[in-house]
Length: 266
Image 1 (spheres, rainbow, N blue to C red):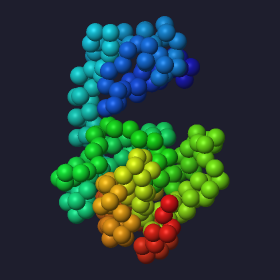
Image 2: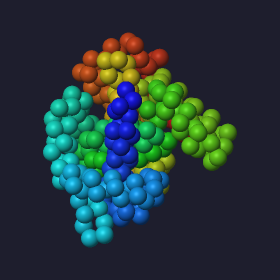
Image 3: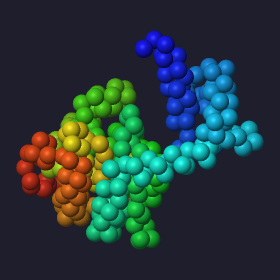
Image 4: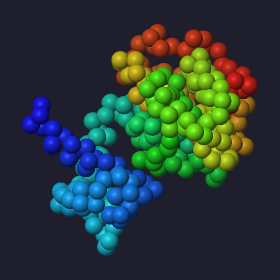
């Protein structure tokens, strides 16, 4: 529809501006927005003025932050999401069973976004906020998406082509195969020193991976031994959530129901 094309392009650019904001970057200047979007100065200035007028952004001094109007949309999105409604008790259950922080991630490009977080009650824990972004290429939650979506895998490989030696690709292939075979994965200290994570895929009715159910904790507690115990628990929780979303388990079930040895996990 050629008549609508300019409007679509404007909307895409506006979304690029809003995507610059995250829990780690709640306030940004115009120059920072220009740098993050790569768009011309005049385009960014015009978009930001429009977003402020629409209350999607608000100005605080020389900086900008997400406008309060977005809160009503976030509430409506949460209330209307079958995935979030079904996942809430599952995430809470995993937190209680494992004693570690549990969460649900969805994918956006080659990043993943935390949409549900239930923090561990312990003193030393993995801390995460709803809306927090992480690269797909590191951590169990990200590897889950890569294991079942070749386009995502290829995009990550392109991003990391200059920094990933052959042995890293071999280790990655072992991890992805482990997920497909066992339905869960442990990754050790990939995102930061001292932090381990486990995750399992959540499928929708079409058989695609719509989310990753994950548990994160300190490496001295959530180690390979504990993963042998909790990995199948995380996998079964993800399968139960998938069934609630209408997924036919036989379409993408792991090749075996066994739990793997820690030697298969990089």
